[in-house]
Amino acid sequence: MSNYVQAILADVKAKNPSEPEFHQAIQEVTESLDLVLERHPEYRYAKILERMVEPERVIMFRVPWMDDQGEIHINRGFRIEMNSAIGPYKGGLRFHPSVTLGILKFLAFEQVFKNSLTTLPMGGGKGGSDFNPKGKSDNEIMRFCQSFMTELFRHIGPNTDVPAGDIGVGGREIGFLFGQYKRLKNEFTGVLTGKGLNWGGSLIRPEATGFGVVYFAEEMLKTKGTTFDGKTVAVSGFGNVAWGAVQKVNELGGKVVTLSGPDGFIYDKDGIKGEKVDYMLKLRSSNKDIVEDYAKEFGAEFYEDKKPWEIKVDVALPCATQNEILEDDAKKLVENGCMCVCEGANMPTTIEGYKIFTEAKILYAPGKASNAGGVATSGLEMSQNSMRLPWSRDEVDKRLHEIMSRIHLTCIETSDRFGTPGNYVNGANIAGFLKVADAMMDQGLV
Ligand code: NDP
Ligand code: 2IT
Image (cartoon, rainbow, N blue to C red; front, top):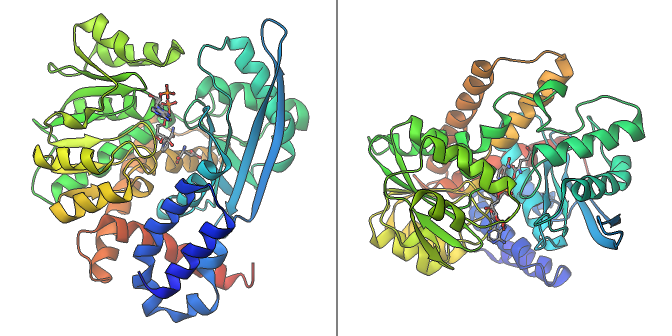
């Protein structure tokens, strides 16, 4: 790392102590950007990177709500409006007890690069709350969402900031949030994505992130002259992204043998297919947050407090959360002959883990490239809302597939151009950066 980017990183750490995930996300990007900043001193003079690590705006607010027993609870709500150089802020909302300002800043930072890679006009943002949906009734979830939106509504809008789902926020929550926005603004607009199909949602949006991850991995495998047909696949998580990924792997002839949750992982050597895929939705909506029930239902093996990376597979698709592949996990995957790791979650691999994959020269794609299908389809939902014309399932899927293939090609071409062929991390970081940086240069000191 050059002295220049080291100084930026040191400054970020000093100014934002106790935000380790934010530091990690910036470190990964700055290591790649050294290559571009050396060739383009104009970005250094304009302090583009120094500007990009500072959010344009951070909103933090109180979310009071009442549970079914009449007890009052106070949570903390956030929206990070990170960068609007290429479009309105866009990115999901996460409801999970682990949410902090630092976690959302890392996610918002990643989102800026990811949204740039989609080629659609979307800036980057992220938000959420430390609210824990586990064990809550529908009415409690609704009251929480209404209270959250009662503050958030004044900061967002279809041309300003367009939130969507992430961990703990799916179709049900988007419905409650949208209903409250509409009451407060007296406007029916595409202010959120991931909406229900009969009130402005897009076909394929629920499946889009998982489908996109597998389309991207398919392109990666193609570079080695192979396909998903007959491949064994480990998936982590059992949420929205995992569900979409499992479906598409099955369609392409692969076999998914694992899912994971906070309680451990299940190993189903017969493959997760047919009714077992539908069961994933039940597992998720049960609000119990455990995968062990899958093992009981289908007679699969359950490994308590373990991660699926110890199973011998050809392809790994981490789809749960950040930092779920540590150095030792990465070593196990490589030792067991895994040839491709394609990220569905945001930053699931630590920097040490990523180095193991790079040294072993296996295919490895960072989430900001490979999971961009979710936000890309959100962008397609925004287009349909603006036109007031819905597209068919095939139309949306075709566009999603094209976007993922194009992102793959961009990563390959960019990493080649900067002298690190096959390095998807450099390809994604540099290509994502260049579009935003040029827009910022065009727009003056913003
Ligand atoms: P869901 O809420 O549908 O599922 C999340 C899964 O990850 C659950 O199995 C959840 O279990 C687990 N999980 C979450 N936090 C933790 C934790 N701290 N430790 C262990 N397990 C955890 O979310 P999604 O499927 O939407 O999101 C999964 C990942 O994909 C996230 O990294 C998200 O940022 C990313 N992503 C999502 C997109 C989308 O469109 N939804 C788009 C692109 C990326 P539990 O809740 O019990 O902890
Ligand atoms: O991390 C992500 O890209 C998302 N959670 C989806 C964001 C969006 O606006 O669809």
